[in-house]
Image (cartoon, rainbow, N blue to C red; front, side, top):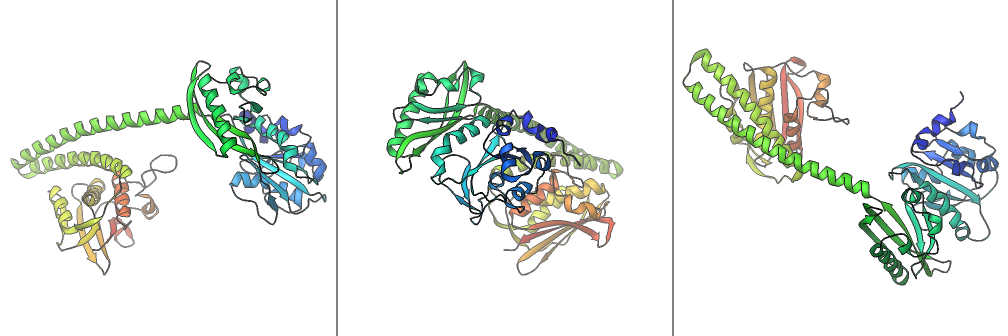
Amino acid sequence: MKIDQEKIREPMSHSQIPLSIFTHLQQPALVLDCEGRVVVWNDGMVQYTGVSPEDIIGKGNYAHGEALFGESRPTLADCILTESEPGSDHYRLLPHDGEGRLAESRITLVSGREVVCMAAPLRDAAGRQIGAVETLRDTPREPPVEESSREQVQILANALPDMIFTLSQDGIFTQFFWTGGRNVGVNPDEIVGKTPHALLPAEEADFLVRAARRVVEAGEVVSETRTFLWHGDQRSFHVTIHPLHDPAGRIMAATGVSRDITRDLLCERTLQETSQFSNLYLDLLGTDIYNTSMVAATIIEMLRERLSGEEAELAQRVKNTVEQGINVIKNVELLNTLNKHQVRLEPVDLDCVIHDQVRRYAGIDIRYEPGSHMVWANPLLEHVISNLISNSIKFGGMKVRIDISVMETAEIVTLTIADTGIGIPDHLKPNIFDRFNREGKTTPGSRGLGLHIVKTLVTRYGGRVWAADRVPGKPEEGAAIKVILQKC
């Protein structure tokens, strides 16, 4: 089957990466996408391996490794994609500055050549990694780093959105690369040989000059985020500057990378403001609804005490419905609290917590044999019991019967809340405690926020919760939720 090379390269083309720079490069070069598939295999690679682009572009599973070394294995570009170190039996890492990797091959290519490999990540204009590039060259008799560094930096700089530069101790640009510079009226070719004052506002230019002097004189690394008005806009750049050494190990210059993070900071600030507004809105809305619902529940209880028979039962149903709404508000507030704070454990009387919750649901057939059971939890344990009872009423109706039992062993306490409701099918049991799936949608089988809070709290108590059947093997005869807590 013939592979459509243009279709394979299309995602990178949309990311504004000039793949032609690698295609027409005299030096052997290959480019992988994030899936490890070959998207560029230039003429130099054909000469080194005898493999044509038509036979390898679009292939993964380390097909490029087989073409180079005669076996399907990762190359230096794969190490960039997986953020892993190359095996010492295949490569010898060479010293270098920058984000990529420079290595000498310890085994020869299929063609018999011994090579030096250079690999670096490819990023789009937003800074997202979209692949990796690897270049090869024959192993020279002299150290290859100094001879090829400028060409390699030029290749990588043209594929990256960052500003890459080298400054002398006197604060003069000896190298300057910036692919996006022309978009703001900066010609990178005109910056070399000048000071940062030809590029930046005076205060920021002074910062770069001082930083370069510190790096060269003291050998320290400078890393700062700078925000300033530039070309009519408020811009933010993260600047990192490292010392650059000569072959003798002496610091001869300062080399740095400056990344425009204006959009990232704006998104982060917008997200924080949105979160603060949402929390404020939730607090106000929750307080108003909670207070209104509490007043309604109190009035209904006063009314129920004056009624009898069917009318009293109806009033009780209305009250239970209002209390379930109150429970939803409390659950939302509780989940917000759990996301912000650690749970501290203390001894809690499980029997008292159960009794308090049973009294809240007057009119519901709840059966519980009292005992004395101390567990490691905190006052939030009441939400576990309340949510499990509320869940049984929600899916079993007002006529549901709820059986609560507690069993102790040497180290644990097992709480079971069973009901005569509709039950839980076996294939849904594993998911009912999960509020969201990966797409942010309600998970199939989920019974809402309440059971998610139950699982969150029980897990933080060092316990476990799962769904079972009231009558083993007969899901249609009702559900049973079992909770294990640590005994104290």
